[in-house]
Length: 153
Image (tube, rainbow, N blue to C red):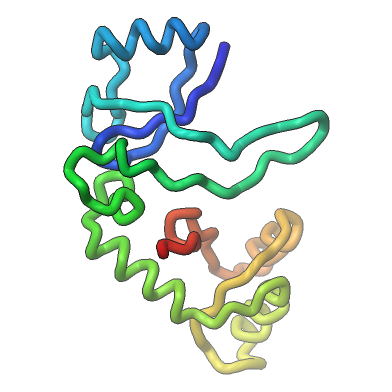
């Protein structure tokens, strides 16, 4: 099996599993490969940053969709899983306006939760273990999807 990173003409990204490159080409030419979000048959392969070499950990970055994958000329990075571009822009603005506390996120989240620091919107990084500990303490937070945190310019 081979896994390809795919994108439709509307900018939706998804994975496809195929027996070979030829298998993908055959299915694509027969319009059997369709976007699961909008059923668009105009699906193309896009570069994937999820590369594993030896024991390396896959990267979390996601490459942008090439302009050729967007026949409508819209900014493909603003179109996410069928969400209106205005909503995605507003969500990104909210994330951008949150205080980035970086690796101090677990510490700052605890201070806010226990009223040791003023309540405010924060964002940052936490390991899986730190995230589990915060959840066990009853501290509410959410992991942000890549499309909200990556730069768009």
